[in-house]
Image (cartoon, rainbow, N blue to C red; front, side, top):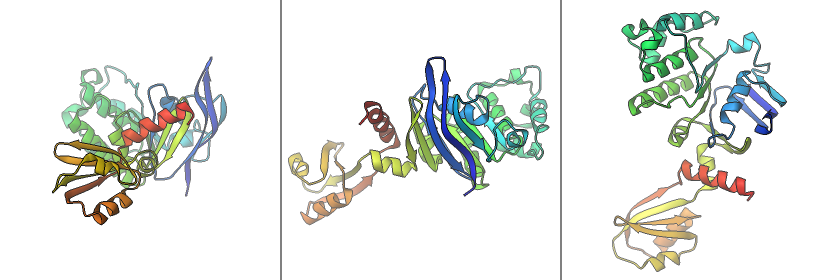
Length: 300
């Protein structure tokens, strides 16, 4: 696989605070990676280091096997950062035309109109007249204007309503299908679960988890088996089953938290429990996220 991003023992220190602490990872061409962490964990600093907007105190950052600040590298990158502003008194199309001019093979105006959902009327608005949602769409358009191979999205859906968020991620999925490499951060864990092929979790400037959403959930959460009873049983009976760690009865359903769902299902069938409407669910990414960060901080 072609390496698009490579961080090798990267640290970044601001006075007495080490925002990024000896991070190493590689991202291959075509991957969609979510970087998750609590506020202040080092996510945005890591993004800025990859973009070449910050220089590491220690370690090496490479994009496309080269220095991020090189022109030929920057011409392959698009970014939508949390804190972004554009010049007032310019029209939307003027700002976008300016950014397009920096790239050798930019997207056409028609492509950008289609991607961002701007109307022709919006296209000719002055930037200071845009609503908050329209400004976010403009920032997304600027990130894509150069037809980049590598796209950075730092908390891209903050401030968007549900409809706008759905439309945004639909576009990201289309970019995935084109083979673009996408790095994003988000506080909405369901977005990471739905979109990311891989998740890198950061805590206190360190990578504490790296894997697919399914791998992280399987490692850090328990499966649940829920069902309705055709005959009523004591909760103690369920507690006595091997591998069952917790039993909850709520809204007419029994939920068993188990560390081996297959064997628990086998026990229920073997003992001829009268149950129906059985559902098996993996724990949520939110649960894995909370448990992983807690246990890494505790040194477990």
